[in-house]
Image 1 (cartoon, rainbow, N blue to C red):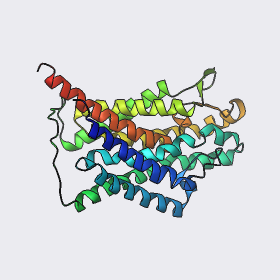
Image 2 (image 1 turned 180 degrees about the vertical axis):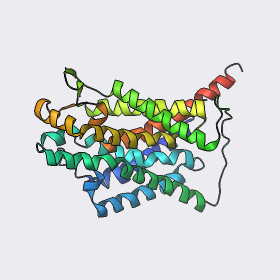
Image 3 (image 1 turned 90 degrees about the vertical axis):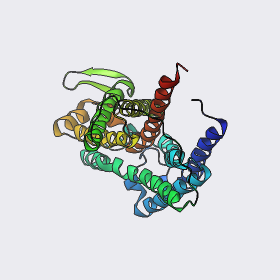
Image 4 (image 1 turned 90 degrees about the horizontal axis):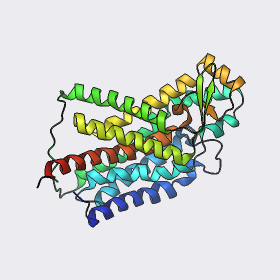
Length: 300
């Protein structure tokens, strides 16, 4: 089940469209000159967020027509591909903490961070909404055959969705704890703290973690990759909530340099989780589809 060259070109076209439209043309909204702030959608502002949402919707719709007749499957790559430029050029959480020495500043920052993933998911969702709108407007539709796959574990729809979300959260949380860290130092109070990972390390860890979750829930539960993205909300919320607990925040401000964190999850910006998590989940999902196809036809 090798990808044909036309299919590879469609994938490249969808990603390229997102990079140009969102990553380049909408770049001023991200304020890349201020690397010490980190890119947060709450700092982009309401007007900037509205422009970015419209751009995401248009990118999804345009990518659908470019990738026709496989627009529904491929065009979803446009928005996260474009936002990936924002994510890699953003400052890190450690950059923000080093310029926010006061308790009130850090409480404000992590207070915003807890719900930031929901906002970025909304931008990605607008891109998918553009794909669906283009599909409705398209006069010609070609239904591509879906690979036949019987899930090893059978659930009804609600239970399957709940199981997919829970499994995704567990896989992502564990994988990020292993993959997304720099230097680890032992601490008598916290047990250990991990250094701020480099951006490249974050990209690697998030893509692999979400990709693994996407593969697992598709293979075992026959669930869509969208359920994996719930893990991004959980990781951001739980990581931020743990960091700003009174006992932990007070201790870290007095005894721990601002480039170390009690958990790896607290060192990842929401835009990085959502953008690279979306790409990883899509990759993991289709890898599971290809793996199942290979197993079914390996004897032929």
